[in-house]
Length: 219
Image (spheres, rainbow, N blue to C red):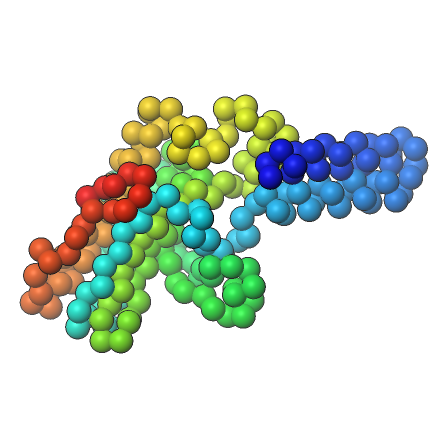
């Protein structure tokens, strides 16, 4: 798919340039459309969280804890600030599993955590949320690989240049260490938030399996 999209981009650029040189408006428009289509396919739609983007995750269902979602998320934000982890960006967003479901209004609120200290880590975003599930509380975080719009364009033009990591396999040992520290820190903050809520409710946090399931396997 990546090779096809790069061919589409370069073909579109060629037609665009020929349209300018030859004065052909049709060539120019078609070339521009090909580039736009390639970039649109390659980039992840804003506010969409696809399962294939997830490289690590953790989840738990806390019994008899409904109504505590905001408490957990507010505590998570507080613990993230207290951690003083460098260059963290933390924002709340409404997320859908696909563009069509987003249009249909099937969204859920997530806390989106991004490590901004390196452009090579920017594609790795953590989505954390808490929601009522009957009388219980469903809590989860997902570490995803989501390239920025600029990185999508660069990768289409440059291909496998080493400038833009295509996934965890393209990270060098320092990048992987930074990624592990960033994800582990977020996980620790989530654990503190859950433990705080459960302790206040008289529940035992030791009943929770804290190990994540995926590439990092943090705990």
